[in-house]
Length: 483
Image (cartoon, rainbow, N blue to C red; front, side, top):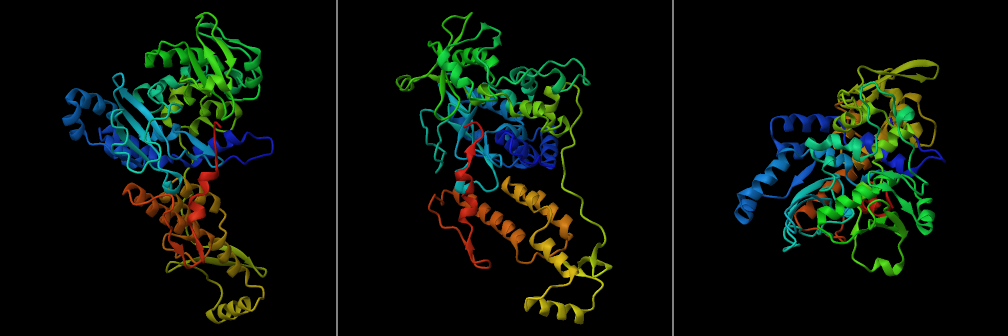
């Protein structure tokens, strides 16, 4: 179950916990694994709701067979569910960050990028990701109406292939600062995990002591969840990969707070504050994946998630030898009738011919009670129970969360568990949620076809007299998980 938010709880971690519960369901992980096992990378992408916007034959004619061989090898080892697991998200619901382009792999200096894109917020229903090729010489080719087709320097997965490449998923433990565990039953994070590097001014790195200037220390004290002890090594990796002659890297903490990490002295890398004049310079930016402690590590430290709820590749990386996890599933569909306390007697309600009905009241009594309700009187407890299930079911929060994360099949499983597989939904909030999700998929289809835009009118819901545009644009007003 989703961990409840309390007044003293970190909103960012709560959002990640919410995403871990609903964003990558067990059924998706199992489907992707089955397709990858037989070499069907395209089928694995389809199972993970990842659209493939590239053609290997066209790429081969344009760039040669050697390039296609490297690209095909990466695609065969792509774990699209793992990419979805680690993709940047926003609070408070942990939805995918919209309208970004992230590099997964680069083929040669200044060469073609394999990128993953998310649609803009107005077309974000379904929470889909797309794979494409980006050529710096032709930056708009194949991007359609995407608002930011150029790869974002903050979200680089080419330097963190363990976030999507199944061959290197085990690197998460070292890159995430998780302690090495020699045995599967080694102590948990509370006993052996390092202290969270929140308000610190220095940390031990492989290259020596990290010296923090006073102006930078004040900023660091405001930010929790930074992987400070990895910054020097990650900055060196970034500069080496880019072939940069500079020795300084910008570390972006929030939209207003940045630091400069200088590697002039290999023994004592230094952190200094960044002035407004410094911001005008073109400098390498430390990717978010290197700036912050991985959210799974933070969730384990905080006790907000169990190892069995993690993605199998993530769990195996953090605890070698750990078996496949059993993530939460939708409840099984109920069997038989349910009991309701109706005026001192136990009455039954059940699905009959696709409709949830009371079984212990005759039709004449039901018509009389319905008329009484229409005139403003109290209804039978059996009728009130049926109305509550339709209009405010106990699992409506789970249904909405699954729809928000694009898991329509999981949402329908929950609905069937409440009302039965042949149930017919009446008017109410639950039906509104399902209708809005269907209209959202239409909006995404318009974006994919190049027919939509920010001002695209959404269909009006004549049944409940309201438009669905505000519901679909809600993510535009959310905040990023890492500021």
